[in-house]
Length: 256
Image (cartoon, rainbow, N blue to C red):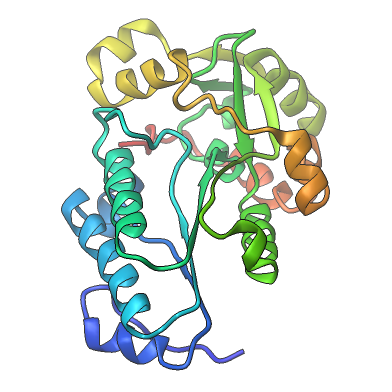
């Protein structure tokens, strides 16, 4: 495998990187990843469309684009989700062979600072009995690799992907088991969700099902092999992140 330096804002560099390439896996930074990335929704859309256009121009045989489970024809009102829907539409229009994957929320995101694990608690968007789907980042890679290995089967498809379905109550149980001590779970306070428009809209999207996810996890397991449950992730690849979150100093919520 050759590593080639690229730059989303440099079309010539991207074009050079795609020369002689059979497949392209397209994923861009977004405004939802925080100010450190300094990426606007318009930037993300431009990057995603440019990658698709250059892939077609280069004669790439298959483009796989990673979107988000909330993407769809109806806008969500969240720029970093609706940007992906716009990129999806562009890919479908330009006449390149493609597959779009729509992942659920990453398990890794549950370990962000400010969720309270260092204080023996965990706060998130789900109500105690409300279901939401999640996926380990490494399983996205496994699924995409399998798609590239069977292009004819997956060409033209949009596939929602997830590895596990959890509730607020199951998160409490899983985190407590992994920590070896009680971890109390609660949903973000309604006062915070009213005051913070970003968090409030995310909560709305969980409540109306757009972010909760609708992937057929059993079918995904049959097609791509066993995917990591949250418990398996906590005990395996997610263990260092979990331990770091348990021992982190209290910090403000990093979501924006």
